[in-house]
Image 1 (cartoon, rainbow, N blue to C red):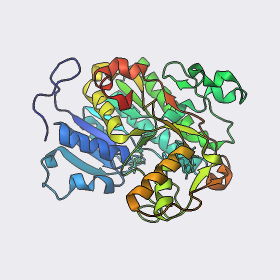
Image 2: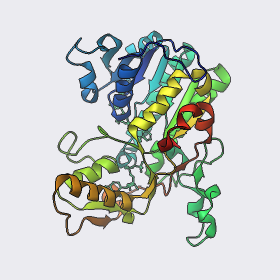
Image 3: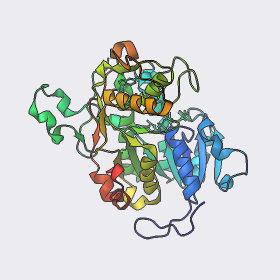
Amino acid sequence: MASVARVDLDGNPIKPITICMIGAGGFIGSHLCEKLMSETPHKVLALDVYNDKIKHLLEPENAHPWSDRIQFHRLNIKQDSRLEGLIKMADLTINLAAICTPADYNTRPLDTIYSNFIDALPVVKYCSENNKRLIHFSTCEVYGKTIGSYLPKDSPLRQDPAYYVLKEDESPCIFGSIEKQRWSYACAKQLIERLIYAEGAENGLEFTIVRPFNWIGPRMDFIPGIDGPSEGVPRVLACFSNNLLRHEPLKLVDGGQSQRTFVYIRDAIEAVLLMIENPARANGHIFNVGNPNNEVTVRQLGEMMTEVYVKVSGEPKLETPTIDVSSQEFYGVGYDDSDKRIPDMTIINKQLGIYLSCTPSLM
Ligand code: NAD
Ligand code: UDP
């Protein structure tokens, strides 16, 4: 139920607002809608091409205490004249819409660039022209590779955080050559970030940019052939879940040596809610959102998921639980990888720190 006397981080009462959420039917959108419906009085205009992941919030009609606070609009932002009107009706727009599965970046680079840059342009324009606040979802991938990855393998500097910790206001964006089409996504996200930043600087757009660091949890992507295309390749959590459910070895791309920091979706959503409800603290900022203390190699992730699956299912472990595959074989030509992703959390802690300082999983 929505609470009555909600206050922001500065002790001011929070007024109910209307949020135009684009991409509300996806993984992050579905969790954000759940949070907004169950814990706040805010209204959501939920825009997406699909609504399967938020059906439980929409149906049966009028059955939930929040039924009059969420409205689904099935539309494709590429071509729909309703977009500007919906943005105008809201106080805040949150843009989550994107092609964001790495298997697409080198195999569908045009769709990837259009989705992450061109299709986001009207959203930025309408927000700027109508003086509406925008929270735009970018990605940790805009950092690309770490500076440390270019050092000799045995260099002691590789252990120095100065060479790998990723800071919003200092770290460079390091991508591979144009032939490495993996970086089409990161580059498109970088350019839309720059455009939003420029709209803020030149035209006063009130914006917040979010860079998620591998948020994981229920409803992430799809299980190929079950609730998604059988040829599709989702992100690693769903890939490994699919392998386990099909009793296949987990495929470790290039030996599974890349490192990632994972954070549970519900912890990350807490941070997004703080951004929504504390505009004075969040506007004009780019925020890393991740857990720097939760780093594993992809190989370790595979081993942990296998252990958990064996425990939960009671099935025996496969004789060969993992196999190594080359990235070319798994993703095709033009794939490349981020070696390591540790978010610096100084800025988000400073701006929205009251919550984060008491939540170890986001520190
Ligand atoms: P997702 O694919 O589950 O959700 C994206 C949603 O956008 C989908 O429901 C899709 O149907 C919708 N969409 C795409 N194009 C659209 C269009 N033209 N018109 C209308 N709807 C459209 O992805 P997600 O994991 O929820 O990610 C949301 C955002 O966060 C993306 O911008 C992504 O780049 C960013 N991000 C997420 C992560 C993560 O850890 N999940 C990491 C980095 C960045
Ligand atoms: N990966 C893997 N096996 C799989 C799927 C992914 O080894 O079945 C690796 C991938 O090469 C990358 C990491 O897991 O190093 C994370 O991939 P994901 O698709 O989740 O997205 P990313 O973090 O690269 O954006």
